Length: 346
Image (cartoon, helix red, strand yellow):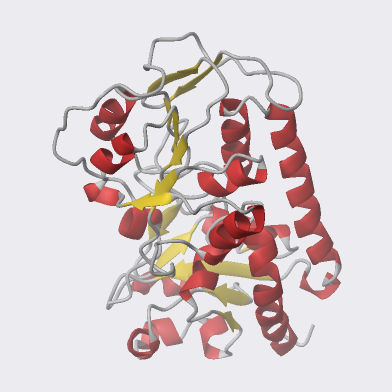
């Protein structure tokens, strides 16, 4: 089975560990008014209050022991000069210590000890997090549940997603992390620089502009899913000058997520996708998926204008936009896109 690389499948935090008695560490979570952000450059002004879907985080002073859950928060914090003491283990594409290459490279370049990793998902390791004595937990792009949040909030302020699990945009994630760290102006600069990196890459490939694409996945025999235009991997490709297939904009996920199963019987919805981006778990899975006539009949699949990789690290990097993944992924993904576009005769 080709399990879709959505946060819900592989990384979503959908349950809680057994209840544990947590010793207080850092500032306690407290009620606070609607979001007030620090201003200025550097450490900013505290306290900072951030209202989110699961509660309100009040951060009284600049945190020194940050823990991250979900995707992207660690990278955003590192780009702002704050190296987490703990982060969720990546279960796919990571090294033996649970770290992805761009994270390891950033810590080693800075001469910092690698952070402690811990299990996420349904088995979120609250006990290990407690031993780190965090004074801030960042989880703005995660699937943190209310029960998990309540446990963590007994330790220190916790920043979760604004509305729905796993749907935070990359700009919002960086802004949220920067606000929580008292560095909103620095966060804006990170966003500006990242947009320039992407736009510069697009400018180097003018022939890509306007090329329509869809980013798809499967969850086993007979299934077909699409990542919607707001999803971060789609946003990354769009930032390079390509255009999401208009058909994908009309697809709505019932649960408010930014990906949706449409069924292989609706494969013809992708007829106008000049390119298809996808990934396969392994060669055997790829062979199985391609053996399905309806899947193989998708025009981009049929003419092999497909952008894909069997490198789990690259697939992971392409699934999120942040200051560490983009410069790591671009040199690897742009030749693949270029090869596919050339097949279109552009």
